[in-house]
Each structure stands twice: as structure tokens, then as C-alpha cells.
Image 1 (cartoon, one colour):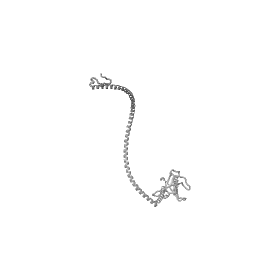
Image 2 (image 1 turned 135 degrees about the horizontal axis):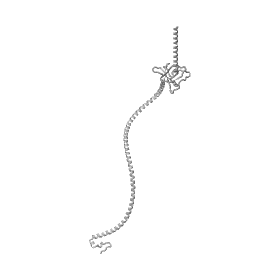
Image 3 (image 1 turned 180 degrees about the horizontal axis):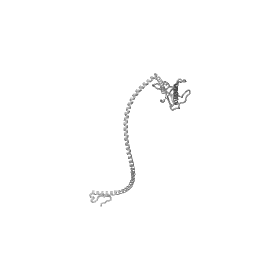
Image 4 (image 1 turned 90 degrees about the horizontal axis):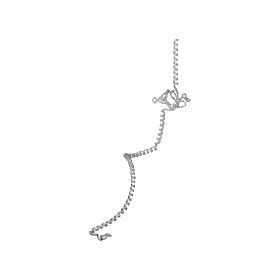
Length: 329
């Protein structure tokens, strides 16, 4: 009886421990799965999901914020895949957040990357009709954009090649060849003209050198001329000053000369009047002196005649020697 009682107590304890363990696991599951995480749905239609598996990482800016819980093909749309993800509550999932599929180039394992666009929107909480969880929008991966651009480039290149083929038909090729020949001839002529132009430019360069030397010499001459002109200007200023002073002195001298000339004129007029008076007196005196001189000459002539004739001088004059009014004694 005692052994059975002990077994019953041990079994009861073990059952209680198992129940407590199960309750703890359930609690931890509920707390860790529902308390710290939120579930979202993503509808992929444009991106391929190669390598994406349940448990794959969900990242935001390179940080793991959740994982893939489930995925399934949509029954309403042919190319839609519904992916259910579990994301940490602390991760900012906004109404403008998009999901893109990224792959490791080495392993090929795919993951889902969340991208928040600017400006940030409101938190994503609205559940659309027909869904269980809020839906994160599908984005466009870099590889898809590159592939799309490459595809567009290929289409453009195809169109360009088609246009080139249409351009280079037989007639157009003949025209192009004729144009090429003309260009060849034109380039040959241009080469000859360029050679002549090079020679001309060489001569022009030599002439320009000479002109430059002449200009330099002219500049030096101009400097010297400027210096001389400055000195001449200084001297000219001095000369002008002296000239002005000389002109003032000459003006004063001319004034004095004019005054002296007036005085001289007055004196000359007085002298002329005195000379006129003296000339009239001299004429009278000369007339009297001439009369007296005439009488004296006649007397001297008679005396000379007498002296020529000693007889007359001693005895007296003859009748022929007598003057008017004279008589012999």
C-alpha cells in the first residue's frame, strides 16, 4: 500500500510538471508570437519567388525584423502569390512601405526586403476586404528595374538596327560611297590648302614677330617721347611764365615809349618852329652877307687887277681899270 501511494504521488507530480511545462510553452508561444510580432500579407504579382521558403528572412534596411510564415497561390488571380509574414512590432511598417524579393547570388536563397519611402506615412493597420491581415504593397526590385531597362535598351537597339538596315540599302550605299569619295577628295584638297596656310601662317608669325619688336621699340620710343614731352611741358610752363612776365614788361616799356614819343613829338614841333624862325633870320642875314661879299669880291678883284699891273699900283689905275663912278685925279 505504501509503495502504491508513493507511485501515485510521483505520477501526479510528473503530470503536474508536464502540464506546467505545456502551459509555459503555450504562454511563451502566445507572448513571443502574438505579443511581440504582427502579421501582414504581401501579394506578389510582378516578382518571381524562386528560392523563397517558409522561415525566410524579412529585413528592413539590412536588419532582420521578421520571417515568412506561409505562402500560397491565389485562387482569384492567376499570377498572384499571397505570402504571410511575421514582423517585429518595433519595425516601422507604413502605408507606403513596399516589399521586394532579394536573392543571394551565391546560394540563390531569397528573402523579402521592406522599403520605406519618403515622406513616411501612417502606420499600416487597415485590413482590406477578403483579407485577414493588413497588406503590404509590392515593390519593384533593382534587378527587375535593371532587367526592364536592359529590355528597353534591347528594343531600342533592335529598332536602331532595323533603321540602319533600311538606310543602308543598295542606293543608299552607293550614295554613301560617293559621299565618302567626295570627302576623301575634299580632305586631300584641304590638306594641300592647310599646308599653304601653314606656310602663310609661318610668314605671318615672322611678320608678327617683327611687328612685335617694332611695337616694343615704338613703346620705348613712346616712353622716351613722353619723358621728353613732360620735360618740354615743364620747360614750356617756365617759358610761358617768363613770356608772360616779358610781355608785361614789354607792355610797360611800350607805354613808356609811347609817352616818350609824344614828348619827343612835342619837342620836335617846338624845335621845328624855332628852326623855321631861325631859317628866316638866316636868310635875311645871308642876303646881307652875300651883298657885302659881292662888294668885297669886286673890291678884291680890282685890287688884284692893280697888283697885276705894277704901274697902276704905283701911279694909279688907268681909265680902263676904273670902276663904275671912279675918275682919274
